[in-house]
Length: 367
Image (cartoon, rainbow, N blue to C red; front, side, top):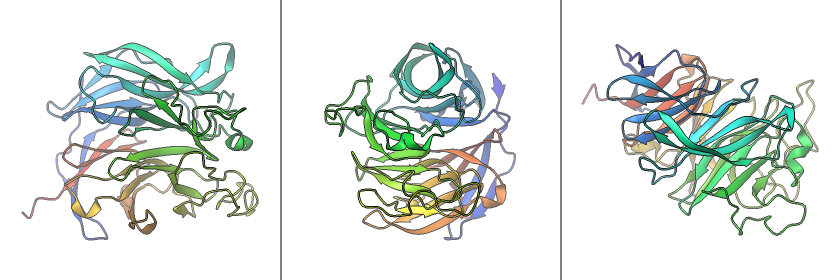
């Protein structure tokens, strides 16, 4: 057990929209805490990209290491990635992971993989891969990958284009797609490409570059995704089945090697437009729809963690799901915000690439 370093003093800030809140440091000295999920009201299970798994106990201020995780390819953007549980999770249920896996018969290639296991004390048991995606490559970039659930027994997870742009328009590969499965790893027969020859039946949407944030809004039954553009052109998309989101044929980004438009332009018939794009890129690492009671003014807003531009990005939506305003929070911290998690009481928990976990909670000092 390693003791958590709790902040000795709270930091009180006010957002530009007038919301006062406290920022409390929950933990420091971790690796890159890539994914987080509450497995009880006081316990956060987290992954580190290098392959470690742990549980933070918020009651006794301790971190407990978990054994039994997968052997991961931890290099570049690869490693142990997301962790998630369905909304009705209870102790002893399945916990879901994504990670980059070395392919047995192709030892120099690695693929984004979905797996699940159960937690028994401080050990994972019954660990099993559900889908080793057809995304194998020797590249160490663009693995994705986030996991989310709807309320009907389906799981969604994202896979990046693995650094090879044509993958995102190729339905014979999982690269550059968002996938949909049943919780046991089987394929839902009403997936849009289930009966299409030459297409992989797990694909829900395609034409994505590197989606590192997806979130299912249970209240409005909407699936959201945020993805990295190249030099500019990060996108937030409302994901619908079977649709093509354009990469690399259309993009709002430029080539890395010069001020040249990627692809054919920004609009093309049959390809979807984002509800918001970022120029310059913020480099998004996560996405949630806030639904808590702690910050009523933020209900229904999207929150994204920004890696390159080091802030918490808040997006207000109108009734039709269009972005109407944006706010950048914690930009003075200089932290690459990797993951965002909403607690049962409606607080926000953030992980950073510097190895910290922070919480944002209402400021009650003047109450």
